Every structure is written in structure tokens, then in C-alpha cells.
Length: 282
Image (cartoon, rainbow, N blue to C red; front, side):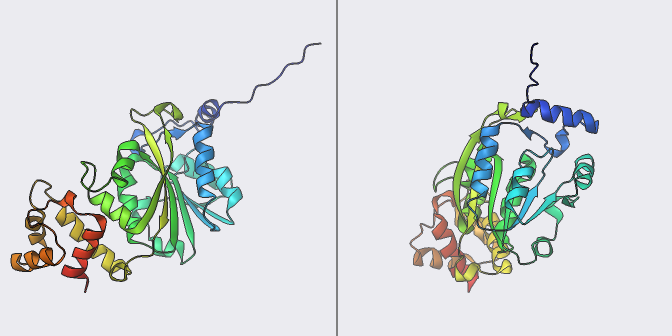
């Protein structure tokens, strides 16, 4: 008598089946591209495991490629899901769920001072905002493991002077030690996006004394936005928008040995911080 072996479903088949059960389909409006490549999934879980925290938040769990493994490693896992159909699915499974937009949450209240790790296969349209918002705080978020469009990941880690170096680079590198985890091609997702992706790991740095509070960091972000507002202009002209007179700017540029004709991308992260302190941080 022949034995009939039932083959295990591939991640792609499993998630298609789950979508059918929910009578749902991936929503472009929410940037839903579900991770289906086990090698990438394993690398994300491995990177998350490098952080010694028991409070874990997953943004946009979707169909749950990461969720089961994250639940096993954390004492407390919270899911943030905007999609109503997926939210209902996680509720039925008894998960701790917040059905809201991650950009509109009170993160201080959510984290409650607990040392926390964030993990997400981020929707591309919110990835930059999440990084900048969480750079401001809360400080008890000790790390993040995030999937980005590869171009955005390159901007985050871009070196001084490169075309990709900008506001996002300086803000991220000021508050996090950042490392590449793994790349993911379009075929690693269902449906396949038109771009490649990259996973980065962020570990919070101890900030400079003049960047310790959220108020100071918000001022720093406002200053960076002014500085990078018009990249073709000299930086000193952009900074006039902060209400600082030109003689004061020229004086502080000279103190820090910064050329008055320097453009925004020519300053290192350290120079951006030092100039902020001289102008606005005291």
C-alpha cells in the first residue's frame, strides 16, 4: 500500500490560504507586502534576539510571518495593526492588540517606561516618519529591527557628503547605532513589490547632554529640517529661517571651522550636533 505524504505548505501558500479564509486581499493603500522568505524571517528574529528586553511591539503584523516567533521570545508582545480584518484575526487569537495608526499613537503611554524593542516589516510610506519620531523618543525604546525599501535604508546609513546623505541620515545616526541585517528582493514578499528591501537594526545611543530631552530633540529636528530645506543653497542661508541673524551664524561657523559656503550634506553628524549646541542648545 502506497503511503501518501502531505507536503507542508510554503509560506506563500500558507498566507494565500489565510487571505482566502479572511476573504481579504493585500491592500496597496496600507503598503501590504507580506514577507514569505524564511531566511529573511529567521535573520530578523535572530537580530531581535540580540536585545535583552521582555517588552516587544510589532508594528503591522499582517498575516504573522514574524509574530509567532516574537511571541515566544517576549514576556509581553503588543501588536499594532491598522487593517480591520487582520486586527479581528489577532483578537480571536487572544493577542494584545492596538488597532490604530502607529504614527498617531501616544508612545509614552504605550511603552510606559518599560525597556522595549520594536520590530516591523514596515509599510514603505511610514518608514521614514517612524524612524524620526522614535529618534525623538521615548528613550525606553532601546532598539528597533525594521524592514525598509532599500533606497530608504541607504539614506539612513548614508555617509557625509554622499547624494543620499540628508535629514534622515543625520537624525537616525545621531540617536542610534545602526547595522544592516539582511537584504530582501521582491520575490521575498507576496505580492512582490517593485523595489528591493533591507532590514536594519537600531540600538539607541546615549545622547549628548544637549539632546537628552524630547523637547531638545524636537528642536534639533526642526533645525535639521531648516538646514536641509534647500540643498542647493549654502547652509548658512537655509539656517536664517530659524530667526538667527547672519553675523551670529558666521561667527559660530568660524568657531567650528565650518566653511560659510558649506552645503548641508558637507557637515558630519558630529558637526551638525555641535552647531546645534552653539546656536540653539545652550
